[in-house]
Length: 328
Image 1: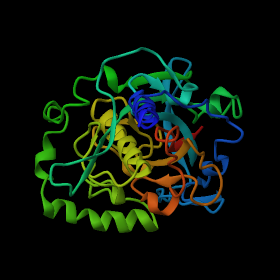
Image 2: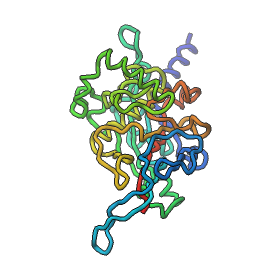
Image 3: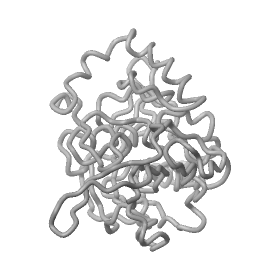
Image 4: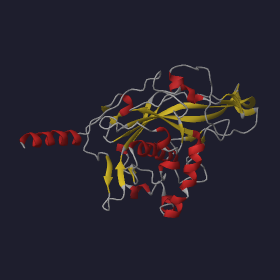
């Protein structure tokens, strides 16, 4: 009896101790470099690499303003598109746990810890809550792989967003300040319509007109850390990342990089089809045709075996962003 109680105490304490796990992203083994394809001039693929892509305008020449000798003059160029690894995201149950920076806690906090598969009162649904961290990660430019390519984002690796400092992240009522339109889609009819978005993202890309849907992962609203219908850690973490993308667009910290060939544009509504997600932790999804997946694609297709009980229930993602730009 004593040994049973001792074992129960040990395992209970271990479960209650929210351990911080993670690792640094290895650019060689953890990144699917084939996801940079297709590369196109206009809408003509130079090399597809067997990867999915959205349509570009059919123009084969672009003209953008450029400052020359103090004067702004139109300069012709080639419209080019490719997929750029641009951001990293942590999805964690432990506040301030930097999963993609080796798995260390920046601060010890009494803030709300994440819960996974917490059953509702009627036992019909499972819910979860996670924190998220968002990193600027221009790895192609950082490694100087294409130093002179003008379309690359020139920035250093940095932390852009920590949900622990966001008072709205764990309060859906306060979140209504950012997404007041969410009240229009909290009904069965709006959610049933997301089945069409699920079908679309399964075979290709999500449907932009169904902007309240996140494909097979669930509703894109509200832009917070609570998952109302937790199917599994991979599904929930994917949805959290997609909601974070939508949230950052809403506050002006993410941009439309495909609509204007000359410059990125402010877009308070997320452009879903300019993003793909690739898992980097706990099990990097760096090989195969399903390594980087469009916004909303269900985890049933690519997520098998990527949630590991214990030290594999926090997640890291690499965000691929499509870039359509004029090479002058």
